[in-house]
Length: 256
Length: 179
Image 1 (cartoon, rainbow over the protein chains, first blue to last red):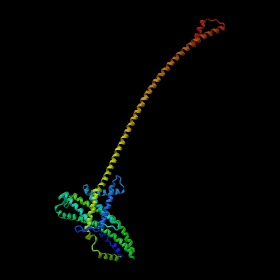
Image 2: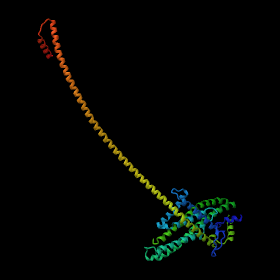
Image 3: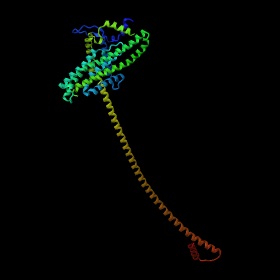
Image 4: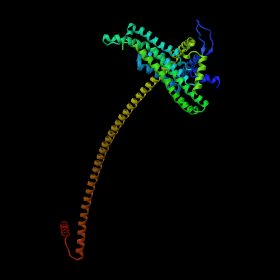
């Protein structure tokens, strides 16, 4: 077994960030263009190409690709209308960008040897903080101090509030954490599992003996997990987007 | 097999210290490029792409609605036209019936007039014919009388019986009157 195989079989190797282009530090920060940035760019380019095509064609009678782009548009619009109402549509471009940024990143991650940008907690954390930041800033700007009614839902006796307000505050603080960790953990765990089972299959065959019996099982598991991971990739993008809508709804209507 | 995997892990572990997603060296780079690309995607989508798609969807909706309206309008027109046709057919029927009735009364009148005229002519001719027949008959009876008188005279002459002309003629007359 050579060194390359060790490296490839290591389930953590796929998450390593490597510099593609070294860039001079800005304010002491290293902002080199990495494989993470490269695959992020790929996702953005594919997203713009796909929806740009659908937009620029703009025929009354669409072809399949244009229709798919328009279905994506309608899907996100309906998602916002369903959770945050018509008023939520002012955030339509943001939610749309968020959903398809994550979806394209997740789907690109499903291609072997590709880097999954959403498997890094710094990325999902930054997106979650962006969402919560918008909720707080917009909520305060639109509702003023009424925004804090979010932590004290009306209609409860006063002594309940002693318990209720801390719980509401904790649940609000937990939102960015859960939002970030759910996506990160799902992508990380899924890709580790895929790599492990694929690795078992290869190692089993090269090891021989009982490994020959284990390898097909591991390979079958890998195939099944692959299907599951495609589902997870779509679902997690959806969950992230719909929770964003739910939180934005709180900013729009804090006194629910 | 597991021994090999474990060996690989430990060998690797010696090379790299941190779990890659928690390795902080790439955090600034990740955040920087995320901001750049996410921002760029947001800009491109919200400024150019999404308004265009929304516009297309709106145009499609309004064009479908317009087409439906147009179809409803044309349908209404068709119904109106059908009604108009039905009305004009009914009118034509009525007119035809009227014309036919008029023609029938006129013809009936003509027929009655002709019949009356012909009847009168026939009556006149019949009357004339009867007068002529009556005249012929009177003439014929007169001739019969004179012939009978002459014949009687002649027959009596053959029998050598002398009789007066006046007697013969009165006898013939009475015989004819009896006859």
